[in-house]
Image 1: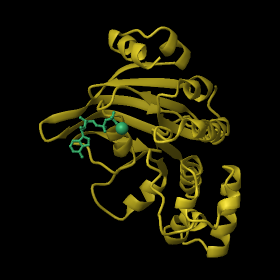
Image 2 (image 1 turned 120 degrees about the vertical axis):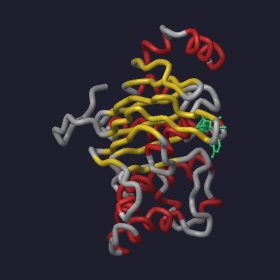
Image 3 (image 1 turned 180 degrees about the vertical axis):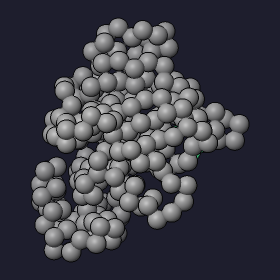
Length: 252
Ligand code: ADP
Ligand code: MG
């Protein structure tokens, strides 16, 4: 799939350069270098503990890194300062565990950040939220509490919530791995649709069907490093490294 470069801007949206991170003695990100173009969909795969979530969290500025830098749309994370909330709102994040606010309705979950951070009027935020809920197919549940929804529905609300801030990039960290099998496709379908619409996405997932249908590139990580980067068909059919071959033989 070609990137849908509406803005006509060829600068990469995400630049990760020379990133190293340690937790104490543990070197969890090892010299990570990659870029993500506008409209590109990148799937990150690799064994548990290989640093996939840490990389996502670093890109979303939920974690700092000791070395290297991460730019989003040309902007580097400031060490400190009020820009952090704004920078973070450029990046939508969807977690494995949905992370909806349990004591707020579905609609409130989607309108909260636009009202608080973007100072949107409540009526405007609600009108927009309803459109987003419709887009992910859960508008009928707008006034329910998250616990009244299935996992697949909750995850679609989480996607709508991240879209409500008009992010430049959406990070999805194993968005379907906590779901019962029959709910996986309803979430993947929403993700595939977003990809088709040109959303820039970084998706940690082992769902090869999604990777083959929607991804421009697969990044394979092991032990904190990027071991292989390739187009999905190439990666799944002809992994170049032994590490990737071994990993694929386990999940295929
Ligand atoms: P993945 O998402 O690929 O499973 P993670 O990024 O969650 O991997 O973790 C990478 C490594 O960093 C693992 O060894 C994990 O135990 C360690 N790790 C993750 N978060 C923390 C933390 N907050 N403190 C210490 N070690 C951590
Ligand atoms: Mg993880």
